[in-house]
Length: 399
Ligand SMILES: C[S@@+](CC[C@H](N)C(=O)[O-])C[C@H]1O[C@@H](n2cnc3c(N)ncnc32)[C@H](O)[C@@H]1O
Image (tube, rainbow, N blue to C red):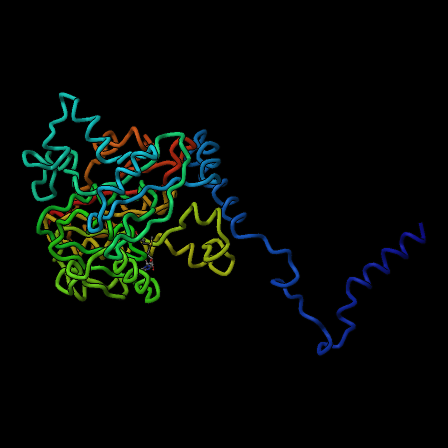
């Protein structure tokens, strides 16, 4: 018993031993070097398990395993290159243009007027018309072509090769990321702002519509804007990207209204987000790094400010598309709700959220859409069609 008491006394002394070491010889414990480093990808998975487990409930295990599996790509065809032979070759490999496939499927349905699906006149949804018509499916540009391999087929595309003029034949991207561009419903002669444009996948899709009279491309990152320029050089002939057709800037998107307010027919706000797939797979540039915790926590605020800037840049009657590649409700519906509220209360701008359910039905064979969203549409990753996550919500500016 006495020995035990002695041990306890000794232990207490040892615990306090640092108080006997002169201050100048004490070593501060360096947390960053001494603690085992937890990979950011693991921190991302822990966070997603906690949040998406609650948000998605019993769907989370299936979405989780898809997110951790190889992503599926689509090949966005470059109309400015020699593409006929290329498309025939993709078809021989078993890939199909998912946009044309949807037209084919729905073209035979008697209650779906072809004019609406193809945008060839007649009743098309446009924010300008307002009211009930704004809830019709958007007219889809027949010029956007994107090949994907069928459900369950995980064949990979080869990298694109340049044609005889040096332009690349297709751009590989998450095929679901085209949906916000298709739903934006760009008509001939429109002026379009892509507020966060780099590296340029959606920009290329906007250019494929061949409908933009003027396209303003912005991204606050100078290095990413340089990448966007290189992408355009590889895909778009010089005569289609003159200064009055395509303008590239590196401004802070949140203050865009100081440059141009109430101007654009269409605005795309494809915001920085947790990029869920990237966060689970890559250490490099991972937003779940401990050093980026504050930046991550501030994302919903930045996203709201960018969406508000997009709303202010649109003309009355114009449309704004908000999109992310995250499943997070906080970065998706909550941002839209907050921006709509602030636009009304602080700026006196009314916006109407367009119902995109008809578009989700149109592409329902190719993508898995979440069924219970309050606002907008969300493509959920699924093992048979491993695209997404992509969230998109279309706002019509009323006044
Ligand atoms: C999701 S990425 C855009 C992807 C692009 N739309 C595409 O399809 O290739 C988000 C972009 O927002 C840019 N960004 C971040 N903060 C910004 C800000 N405050 N203003 C403008 N751009 C910003 C980032 O540099 C990044 O390139």
